[in-house]
Length: 262
Image: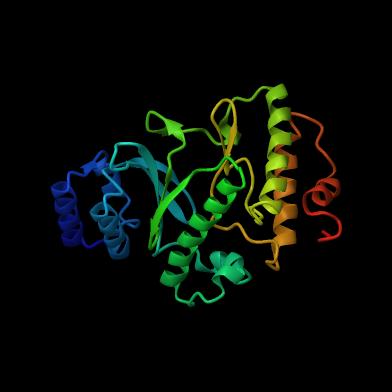
């Protein structure tokens, strides 16, 4: 249950620091998101001047909620909060256990979620550095990740599945996303592991790859399976726009036949 005394204290403290709660009613509805650990992390981010406004919900996923926010300069940001109480610890473990970067993570649910938040931050940095168009990772603390906001007027860009895409544009996007998968693998040393029309945004001109918490290195024991699944998802979605390439051919192009076999 949510500790209302703690939340009221948090509200008073953020108001003292000039932090605007732009959609307080909506925040109060999502009680399961704002547990003690999350409030502490939010308070620390406010205290460090990383957040100047907290707004309404952008999206609600299986493991996390994303809220609109603003940084100390009033620039739009996305505040992603992984739910400590209700996140699926077992699902996360499948992507964490074989990643050498996080092999020392303790087995408690709370510590795993904190590590998962750090993992997404790290993955976004690596992808961005490799030239992938993904949200810029700004800061993280415990189960909260601050990122670049991808949208306009406090509204996020639509997921690919919701976007109005012409057939010709769909063909171009298909080949651009395959190129990004190759770059992600060879330059960022990552497999997204959950790539689909749900985890790609479209701003009307270009695509933006999001939700990279589960992304793994090629050394992960599940990397081949995850990459093949990503390819099948992309081919399935874009089959309505163009003739898709053979999945084994794409796989070989991405990883090089000397490195892996599906």
